[in-house]
Image (tube, rainbow over all chains, first blue to last red; front, side, top):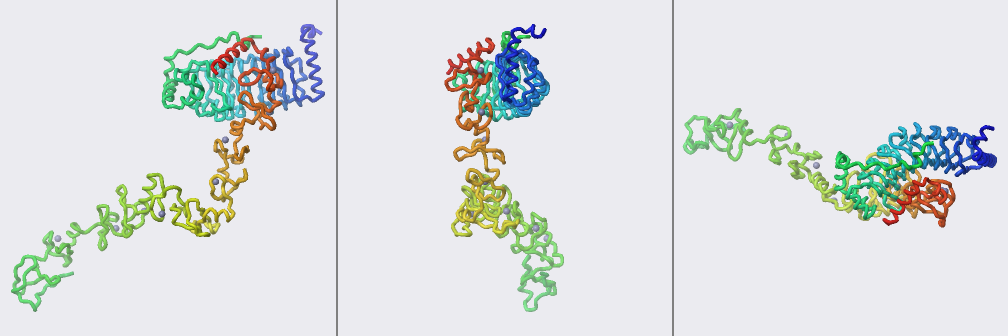
Length: 286
Length: 344
Ligand SMILES: [Zn+2]
Ligand SMILES: [Zn+2]
Ligand SMILES: [Zn+2]
Ligand SMILES: [Zn+2]
Ligand SMILES: [Zn+2]
Ligand SMILES: [Zn+2]
Ligand SMILES: [Zn+2]
Ligand SMILES: [Zn+2]
């Protein structure tokens, strides 16, 4: 009885959710939706981990801070949406889920990822945007996610992108907007399938000439690069259009400028300050 | 030719003089007679060293006689290849002397004595090798038959290159060009000297599958696709030109594409299910979607052309979900959106 007492409002809500889960089990529902249900802990809903038929779970807009490792019992789960919750960490078991293709953890409070996180066998889309991640917190095997076609890391705290990004050979979309990036690795140019690159709102002054190898200017491509302290020739070309930037960085003149920039000229240019992120919801502490 | 040392009885001493010193001979004096010319013994000597000839052997050059040693030093050629003296036919070439069998093309070692040679970079070459070098210097082939430069594609036959017009089709007799096909007339023979040439028409009638890309016969594995035959390595993506090598390909308007480029060009892989969209394709935010998969990225609410949605990282978010986002984020998204609108 004491448990019920401390959750008078949520408790009523919870019983509805429990009923929903019971029906889902009886009907062998494949797609679970528990959106904006004020759920703060999945431990109160143990049933959720014994629904072997379920292929998609949507838990957006709740207050979940811990994802129990039992989530990995859902062998048929393909899509897990935990967007806009209070997650501070993820269980290692997640990366062993055999059919998980899409994982959305955007708008949470992650500042670290479990070791071995890069082991997902078939993950295609990983959304980690709007968290507190940086390159030092990525697990060693993160870039082994070879099956990934979309990686969203926007709105985090990256200053550098590790060159190992080149191992994500199937990447078509790379979101890096609103970070603290100071430079990009040349290896980005090896991502032959990339057709969306979001690098707006960073601290970039130059981009690797290798980016011109990519197919970033077609009707199926997106290249967002605004709001960076670009060197003057780039910002001039940017005013004329993305295609002008992509042509310009192919030139010998740019190659020389870029090489000079990456081999030490940096100290001459003051490093712009990081963006103030104190107001980000991901910084809130429970 | 040893000289004779006896005064011929038919001649009188008074009228006889030495070929060398013009003096007469004493009676009983030994006289050298060579081909009707007479000498004092002491005058019949090497024109160079003035010594008598050992064993009477001398060598004659332009009317003068030399001992073997001086003749060799002065006139006799040594072969520049083997270092032996050349007696008989001497090949004078490249500022040196050669035995005929020692003077050979420096590239293919063919004897040059009778066929003539061409000086190329201080090397003696046969006409064929010289033509090859000159042709390759300008990026072309030279015809193995006439040594002329081949403009355009060469005809390849039995491992060599030729002008097509030197050959006729084995079957119909028409004059050939570079499109002619070389056929192993006896399959199983390793040597190609049994091969024969056919014009394209006769060749096609013979039933060997022809590659749709290179138009050459396919003698190994045949890929059949798009209503044509292909060499395995010539069946390639129309965009990136990488061979499929057994991987899945996608066909569109008579061309084949790899998955990536099919998607890139025709945009028909759904962003959510990553399958080729069958039925209506929904195109938005530079991506393609199955109609039933175009939905809010946060709550799965299905969206259609009339729905108002917000763009978050080039993905659609419904109005309700947008309003549930942190206000701080919404504010930044709004500013970014206004900036792009201003720029466009
Ligand atoms: Zn002599
Ligand atoms: Zn010799
Ligand atoms: Zn030769
Ligand atoms: Zn010829
Ligand atoms: Zn071929
Ligand atoms: Zn391709
Ligand atoms: Zn789909
Ligand atoms: Zn929504």
